[in-house]
Image (tube, rainbow, N blue to C red; front, side, top):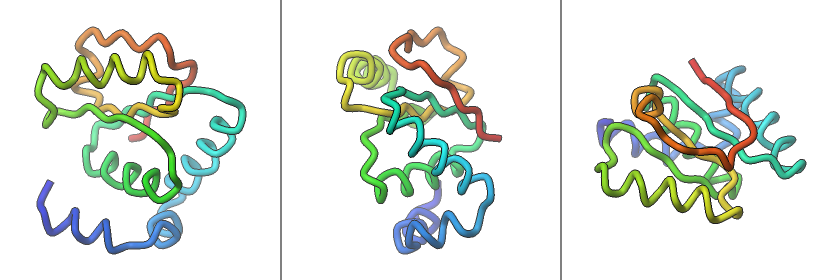
Length: 116
């Protein structure tokens, strides 16, 4: 992702990001409910830009999460998977659909969201 787009995302307030997208409004509301009920969630998206936006909102919401996309080296991917599977304080795992298809073992999650 271009540095200028990342910088723009960091400048935007969560409310601005969420107000601009009905999809994001739904995801934020759903995630609040899932977290309240102690669910653990995988979020898949084809778009890494969408993952960037969700990541920024989650940071501002205070959600603990891990992320894997095509930019993450293979060695680090397994470390992140292990972290999610063993540390229950991580509530959500953000994944690009491309890396999600490579035999990941994420059985500790009990909900899946696919963002187009």
